[in-house]
Length: 298
Image (cartoon, rainbow, N blue to C red; front, side, top):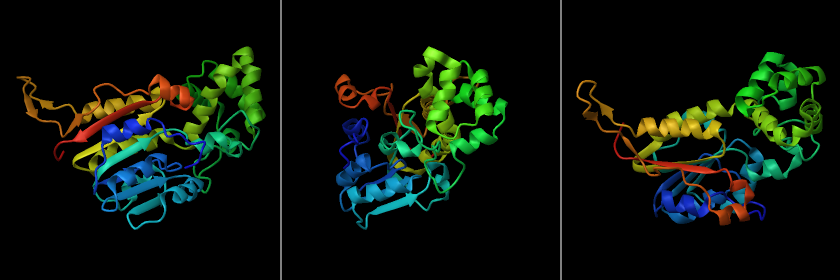
């Protein structure tokens, strides 16, 4: 495993999802293979690992960690395309949302404002449009909406005007735009702006909705689905969908349960990283882990 890569909630995910020998696991956010390699070791030769990643470079690096055994199936795709893949029902579905380590550590991808690079931000650079192309063609209204909706940027309209006028092509171009509009507050606003644009470029909200619609249906009876999220735009839909899936139907007149829920909550409250983990891996500080179990057919 890459020395820089510390999987978030690594031991916790294993403890709660509890992969066993012979089970099958679907990791929809392979990254560098940190979680996946642990799952693979746990299920053994009799189990199977299915894993996907939108970033082809991640797949190449993860193969070095996982090897090329017969019980590994890797897919170059985003989990927003999950229903198009030929994957059988599995015992575990796992997602670690947000950026993978290389996106942050390798400045040439355009995800970080700490290094000057082309403003790309695509997880899959073989498809879609880059962040700079989006900002060059989107309307002022659209940019303002994205900044407000996905970054909670208070000065979204002023920033949209500046971006529309300057059409940033590099990360430092965008950084300078934020600094012009926000002044001394730019340092705290920059992560919000970069997050907002990254989310829209990769259509992350729609992809997450698709995962939450399809993922639970891929579970065998007794199967577990776990999702690690990092901000409210990710955690809110996870929380809402898991609540819906685990809430029994009730009779409108009597209030009695008319149909048991097909899933149950494993985590009554989201699991957060310990202070020790946050100290060792600051990227874990905002992580929330939620898990459900399938108890019957929906």
